[in-house]
Amino acid sequence: MSSLDKGWEISPIPTKEQVGFYNENGYLKFGRIFTKSELDTLRDYVDQMIANLPLGKRSEQMDVPHFTNPFLFQYLTHPAVLDVIECFIGSNIVLWSSHFISKRSRDGLAVPWHQDGVYWGNRLRPMRVITMWLAVDASTVDNGCMRVIAESHEKKDLQYEDVDKEKHLFGREIINEDLNRSEGVDLELEVGECHFHDAFTAHASNPNKSGRRRCGYTMRYMPADVRHHVDDWNHQHHIYLLRGQDQTNGFNTYQKIPDF
Image 1 (cartoon, helix red, strand yellow):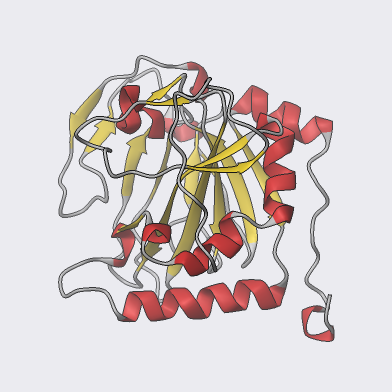
Image 2 (image 1 turned 90 degrees about the horizontal axis):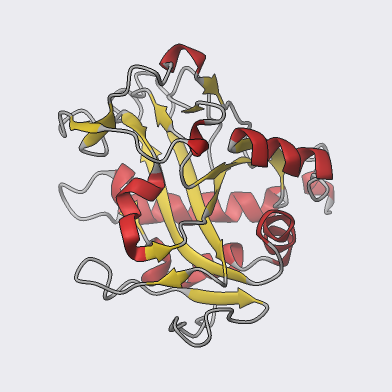
């Protein structure tokens, strides 16, 4: 760690207790994996990406940015990240997806209560994905941090209804009354910290009405025994074998990791 990174503590790999908490509750708040200089470089890059967005495209909608920005693979494939992910899903690791969700100050969109796995449907079988949510900016209650409901990853049959797309990032929201939103846990993060959640963990976030941007990078991984079923929705969606070996007997097609 350079002198510029003093006071920026890197967390060790998760303990058995932390992995157990994740398995039981469907989420885990964690510390920092990247150095301060690495995070600063990423933020500068994202700032430029946002500045270059097409007219009318919101900064919450920067899905699969690694498809067109190979630079991001230095973060997605970082050995320290994979060492942490391995503690949760084992040594055969596939990159499923990534997404920048950057809520602008004053009018950042809300994210309705949802489970990621419901949106991905039968494209992944079995549905086993862990998302690492990296705080590019500080993420607080004030600027719309992510909220989760513990143990909700055990509920696979929740019901949804449409919501106002002008006010929400996604168009559907969980409506089950037995999912107690008042028990939602606010996952506040300092810059560079991260948290993890399961594909079926119910989560949401409030709109950003503060004067500070809230940018997070979701980095999504799955074990290499998950089969990626290609259909009209995702026939151009690429997955990448990052560590270990394929466990689908050749069912999956992996793309070559680009130079970065």
